[in-house]
Amino acid sequence: MTKKALIMGAGGFIGSHMVSRLNGEGYMTLGVDIKNPEFSDSNAHEFYLLDLTEKTNIDKILVEHEDITEIYQYAADMGGAGFIFTGDNDADIMHNSSLINLNLLRSLIENYSKKLPKVFYSSSACIYPEEIQESPNNPGLKESDAYPANPDSEYGWEKLFSERLYLSYMKNYKMDIKIARFHNIYGPNGTWDGGREKAPAAMCRKVAETKDGNIEVWGDGKQTRSFLFINDCIEATRRLMNSQVFEPINIGSEEMVSINQLVEIVSKIANKKIKINHIDGPLGVRGRNSENSLVREVLNWDYEYSLEDGIKITYEWISKQIIKS
Ligand code: NAD
Image 1 (cartoon, rainbow, N blue to C red):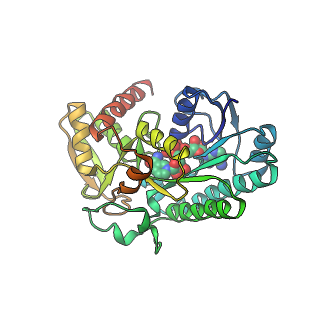
Image 2 (cartoon, rainbow, N blue to C red):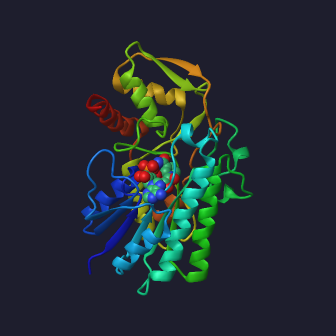
Image 3 (cartoon, rainbow, N blue to C red):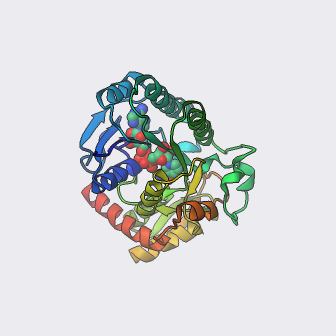
């Protein structure tokens, strides 16, 4: 029997990569998003342009396709620090993203007469408590660090609420649900301008665009993060889907760098001498890193791309987008 996957958020960065991966594995793919993919046509065999905050829209897909075997839920109102940490978008982030998750789960229970599909939910490192991320030398966030909860953003609180929502459906409706806490995923086809872009794409764009070598960085640039290349993220997610792991798990890199070091890596790849001007801006926590003991043990997975290798591919792609724009 052909495996059939529904990818929610297939017009976005990670969703579009998952569509390609599943096509390559012989799946029949259905994509849905409120927007078309920005950088190329969707590879999904069928693509629905629908607003998933309307439950009738997800009902429509599930009624039409009663034989979906896997669902990948990436759809969310999200962006980088400039979108999440200003506070200006909090109500929309919480309202829209929660509704999408509530609608999916309720619609599955109401409409699916056949075997319920396996569901993947993309949570985030933003669920971890603020007070254990105050030092740039973060020792790595373990899955068990999540509670007592105190995420530093409403985006993180929504993710934590939705993790618990999925876990409740797993408990009460015997659903097979997988939850990953992604730590800063980057790579080609990711948003690189417009205000929702994340640090790796923003730094690549700034370095590629500068004529005089000056770029702006929010804060002192000593805040730390780890960044995971998209191919590693997709591989880990596929392993999680095929596993017997039923608890939220980190999918991230342990190669922690400061934003200043990230700029150094980009400028080396671009072969440009860069001067950083530090300006005020939304920052998020002071230090964040993934701790991968559990994921290594239960999925036998580790990241393969160094930050430099991944940024090289991303920088080349963003440079081409700038020329095209
Ligand atoms: P993205 O913004 O590129 O993709 C999300 C997609 O959801 C977008 O295409 C958007 O149009 C779609 N969407 C938003 N509202 C919708 C609606 N009402 N109806 C239908 N579609 C809607 O983001 P991404 O980087 O691909 O992230 C995918 C998921 O992974 C998100 O849930 C995000 O929170 C999570 N995540 C991502 C990262 C990361 O570093 N990229 C880190 C942690 C968690």
